[in-house]
Length: 328
Image 1 (cartoon, helix red, strand yellow):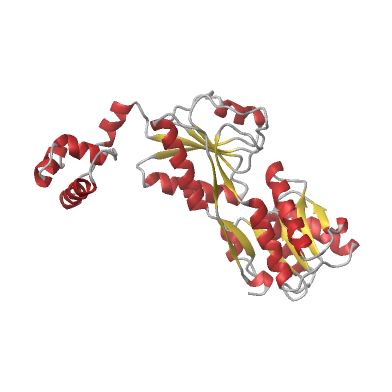
Image 2: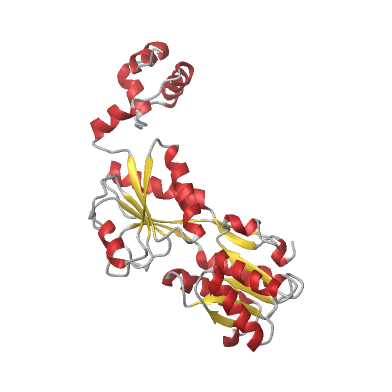
């Protein structure tokens, strides 16, 4: 038989109302009483009636996660982190892909379409300065133009890119190629390029336009770009790729050309997708803390649902993952 709140109240020697306050995390409960009730909840194995709670609050218990595509592994890893964090909160995640289309992202922002969930977490790539307000709970993930009035969880792209390039510089690399210029999400590209330039400046190195290579952030496009570069220009001694897919393409092109990595050229990427640790050589990269991004986004969505809320901008951290491609 399921344990009820009245069972917990009798066990803890408090009122059923007090048990309800603890279960719903209301603040007006003394620490000692909260601890006693929590001990009874744990001892009796109480589980809240989620369906009843949703009927009372009018919530569906689901959120929508919108990403541009699953062809880029980063978004699959992000979705896995959000689903995992939501499961811990007894929340279901419905996943949509937008293709990065402005009209689709704008429709989600404004509450259109046929998605009936409690709110939307969206990794948007095309929303601009004029797309500043939402008509229902929305949290944006990624980089936003300054002044956005929508809850947002960002990644420290500039700092992370600077850390990646500094890692190459610390290893003695001086001709460092920037791979993937002018492609990918515009704001992310700008910030990562700024980080690249800041690292060079700190070492007194003037950026060389010949070491800035444009290509899509895909493995195939990056492999083609590096192959063409090897035939046309002097070999760089380091490569910073805008994401791991491009970095893996660079690795492929270098290995096929018989160039030793990291002996002749060190390569570092961005995102820490699963394949980064499985490549030969394994890929050094910058890892955005996806679990933190997911938790922050769900927290902000919950705050929008529960109370009058002032839009916030929170920044998740990153870690430098040093592997064989930079001489671990």
